[in-house]
Length: 144
Image (cartoon, rainbow, N blue to C red; front, side, top):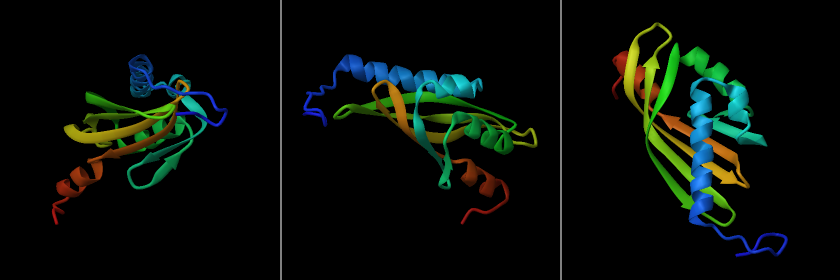
């Protein structure tokens, strides 16, 4: 396969492993939270899309959003799946969230899926899904 300059782009196991390591480093920085360090793994102009079609442009916006949603939250990364592509790698991080709701009530086992696209050593897209809304609805007795 060739890119727009006519150069051949090959996805290698080393490149894929490097791209997965970038995603892990981003996730670890975001859990500190250290949004400025997390941003170093992301391309300028990135769009980060969360559950509910909430869109952010910088990890500091995500940190602020999470501060209103949780007293604190961390990810237990259970699996990372990588799909090499033509000059990009798509990385899925699957696992569970644990932490505390704003009222201090602890939670664990809240499933999440994060989908990243990595190009040229930087995350260029990030999409986030999790069960938080379902858990809140269940706590309020809404099960239908």
